Every structure is written in C-alpha cells, then in structure tokens.
Image 1 (cartoon, one colour):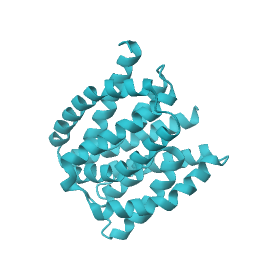
Image 2 (cartoon, rainbow, N blue to C red):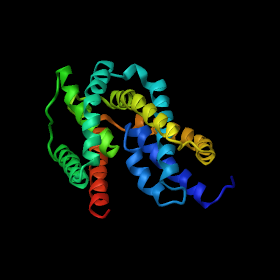
Image 3 (cartoon, rainbow, N blue to C red):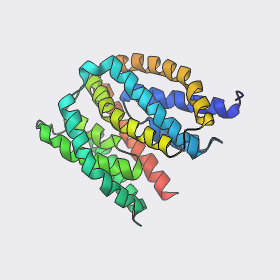
Image 4 (cartoon, one colour):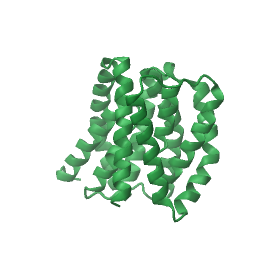
Length: 246
C-alpha cells in the first residue's frame, strides 16, 4: 500500500497515543480511538489495530519492568474482573448505555478532581481490596472498553510508585489484550489492510516507546502522581463529551 495522508495521520496518532501509554501505563486507546475514527481507515481497522498495538505495548513494557509488577494484586484484579464481564455485557445491551457512561465519566472526573485538590488520599493496605476494583474494571471494560481507570485508581490508593503502577497495569492489560485481539481475529477483522498498518506502525511504536521510557524516568514522583490525575480528568471529560454529543 502507498504512503499517503491517511497513513501519516495514523502514524502521528499512534505515536502520541503510544507516548501516553509508555509514560503513564494507560490512556492510549481513549486518546487514539476518537482520532482514528476520523480517518478513512474505519473502525473495523482502527479497533483491531489498537488491540494489537496494546498487546505489543504491554509486552514491551513488561519485558523492561517486570521486576516492578505487584503480582499479588494482578491475579486478584484478574479474578475480580471475570464476574464483572457478563454484567458489563448486559449493561451494553441494555437501553441505559449512555447513562452508564455518564456515571463512569462522573466517577473518573470526581476522583481526579478530589485527588488534585486534596493533599492526602486514603491508603489501601489489604490485598483483598483488589477484587472489587477488578470487578468494576470487568464491568467497565466489557461495556465501554474502559477497564483502565479503576485499576489506576486502585494503584493510586495503594501508593504504588510510578514504575510499579506502569508495570502492574501492563500485567493486567496483557491477558485481556490478547483475548480481545484473538476475538477480533476470530471475528474476521484481521485483514491484509490491517496487517499493512500494523507493520507500518511498528517502527513508530518503537521510537515512541523509547522516548516514553526516557520521559517516565525524568518525571519526579510527586509530579508523576499529579500528571496521572490530570490524565484521568482529561479521560473523564473526553468520555463525558463523547457521550453527551454522540
């Protein structure tokens, strides 16, 4: 396929979305999907492309930072996620989908604003607290493809340092990402066009990952926490706007 304006736009979008993921460990899909939907590749290419990119990103970050993973929290989050998935699918099929998105947006915005304004947050010390956060992530992930914020909020309450937050998020996202990508393949969405875009994006992904790794080390701990809360606020506002004006 030729190098055209569409390919350049896709590469630029994926560069900056990958940068967000490499620095913070989450947020790339909510940034990229609305922009990719505005290009001519269509959602049938954009959705599986982002799923494949997510698997590569999670694996790449884990290879570099696996020693920082909180495995005891990871498996509890995954166990908690499983019963939440069917409830999320039921919510997706219900006539109250937009209401659920508005509640999700309000929760994310509320937590982000509270975190930015409050000097101190409560700290979760018990390992079992991962289960309810995983359960909520399962509901929101299957209903709205938004399983990241509950896990990020959990990590915030656990006072994870930046490297542990990024690494543990990837250990949670990688299994779910593989399942989603495989589902796209079984659903017939893996096409030659998708393969071309995937291969074309790999060099850009590698460059963005390298830059993101540098930036993540350069951000001080206190400023990283604040940046995470600002990113959550932006994600909540984006979800709110998309829901209201859909």
